[in-house]
Image 1 (cartoon, rainbow, N blue to C red):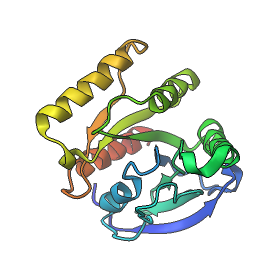
Image 2 (image 1 turned 90 degrees about the vertical axis):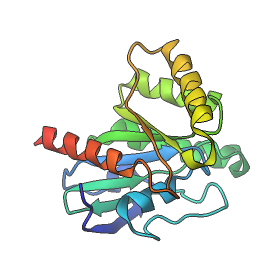
Image 3 (image 1 turned 45 degrees about the vertical axis):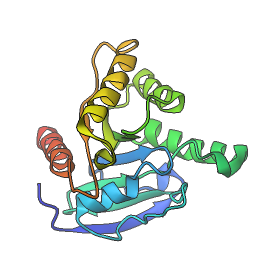
Length: 199
């Protein structure tokens, strides 16, 4: 898939105020500072489409971008950012949960994980929650340029083995580097195939 057009549409905190035209939505989520904005900018080939920041926890709204006038890319707030304080975290969690559980147009959720880290409880809990709620999702390992291939494989295997403890079937997995522009085509092909199947 070639992205010819990517436009910002709307930001809000309430899933009921999201676009009402029924187009499929592909949402991106991960812990703060996982490289979400950089990945979105790489996928769309637009440098400043999603706001990148060295300061974690920048995205605090549900952001909709219309792609090729066919589907929405949705940038969700990052979860688990400690410095927000308990009340702030709870507020963000509600925004995320309400969108994921109630948004009929959500076609696939891309969960971003930093490939440099071993499985974190917060991510595993989130993955298991998605499974319990029957939410279709794929895993995206980010920042693959930051570690060697052997270490990347080892870290991914640790994750997969951890998931196999509770999952019979593993979700689709992508490996990406925004800096080296790796993995974007695979994600877009995956989205394109789902869109074809929906038609």
